Image (cartoon, rainbow, N blue to C red; front, top):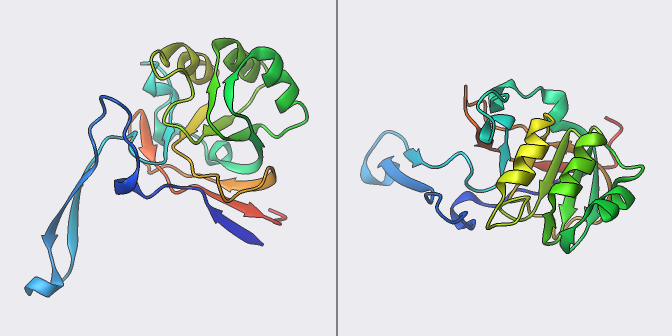
Length: 193
């Protein structure tokens, strides 16, 4: 088996415009005579590699702690696309793929493509960028995907991964009632899981 860490380091990651940047404060340090090292984190639920839960855009949507593990783990397809993805392209690319699809490249979903994913019963989609929709108006795409109960991974690092079939492990932190959470996303190649 081969493991691919497809997460970005939190403090070196780009931050979505308008979101607060993550911060850390060293509360205790062994080198300063403290008994242990202890760090305080202050961050947005959508910093770094993270998962959007339906609650991100839908008040009545499932919170991140309510996402079933089988939705964020399991067989996954990695595909590559650069540009604006329309419905026709979406249909062609996801045909025969798993219910979880990760996108290499700078892909931007249109609302029509999002509807294709929703109608296909996709459980999860993930992108390398900070949003699945157009940066200046991401709400429509998010509402379509999240309204269909999908989970969304954003801020992935897929440069070292070839297109193909993998096993995905992308459990978000169990933050009760929250709209999203950071996660350590991993792809496993050659797994019989």
